[in-house]
Image 1 (spheres, rainbow over the protein chains, first blue to last red):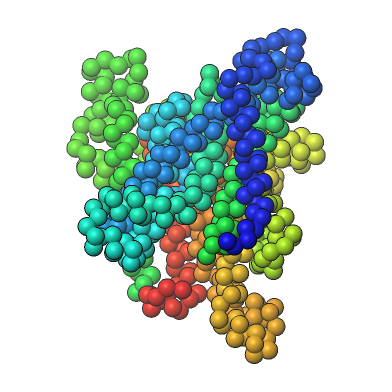
Image 2: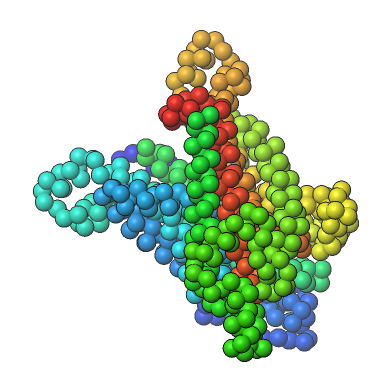
Length: 271
Length: 316
């Protein structure tokens, strides 16, 4: 047994992300106020014990809104990364393991696609499928994240192909599907997991950007990006709205970023 | 030179493929532009007339080739929404966006390269931990959030510029540049963090190589080895990364323009997507795509002239 070193990044990241996820899960079932309920008496109130994050120009409770918004943003980011990771890994596995002309063509296409800023690709897809709908946002971002996952996993699968244990499995008559799923996939997790953390953060930022621009998630669904664009208009009268919404996005990305950093450190220690 | 010619040929080929794919994609979704333009005033006769006028009756490839020819001669069609030639709508906005991106690129290069090299001194310990955390934090704060804070702090409190009131590049160049500078700061912060990270890991990677150990064991000091050998070898990675950065900031500028109310290409793109003004969207997408491909090619060509090994077709 080798001594385990304390991984500060991983611990801090898991702690921050854990607290945020817990808050969001609670927020899905219970919020102190109705996030859309307006109140003429409680307009533009600063943070207090009654309203942790204050209220906006309609007297809506910002803490409740931020909880709901984080829920939407998290769900979309997770769905997006799930599409990107599953499809991307499948493409990477097939092209990396079998190689050949399909591999060559797909990788050229991949090189071209990964060169493009993800927000630009997402905007292109959203303009094709139609803006202002959360399922289209998931679809657009999901498609956009496929190439980067395919690229990372392809390299991993291609390098595993020539290892002795895979050769052994093939000699024993294992089918390609079994080799890919049972023997290779677990060994690619060390590159897939950090890629997921990066992908998740890109997804959060991309969704927030698109909703901020008004072509992502639109009301009645609350998303942190859309709320921030609302908050910009009332910054002088209710600065806490923008502050807490923006800080929530930053904290979410920061926490997952630290997890990614911690995973990479773990990887370096193993290597 | 042979390589450069080959690279430029690939560049043109990629541009044609990209423009073809974009044209085909919008052809699929845009439906009947004549119907869109006429809206409720559409009668079968007027529709037929407008289709004839816009050349929609011609086959797909004929329309694509005339669109491509038009693209290079500055005739990009007519916007559905503004009923104006697309080029005259886009040209002034392109200037503004490019201006902001160059300011941002300059900021990124000047700040992050020295900072990245400097921070390579610490590979463990408390300073390194704080640096890593701060680096992650800078990447986590979205530019539209810093944008709101900067327009409030520097704009409303310190009155260094008026948020939402862009002076205009031709009317007041100096004031516009100042305005764009604040926007560029917000655009640059996450990219600076990423570039520092990249530069740092490249330098550390080089410092661990055998030639550095040899040089140091022969009595050179670390600083001298860093300046004379390591930096040269890190340059290729830096140029490649900065090429990607140039492409990324154009993507990021879309959001920052919205926050600061800068009448650039990004705002135009977003408005046109919302209005389904396909000729405008298509043109902006192709222009931005060309930009991405072009910066990649320039970075490649620069690397060729920096590293002789690449000229022989090897890998650095």
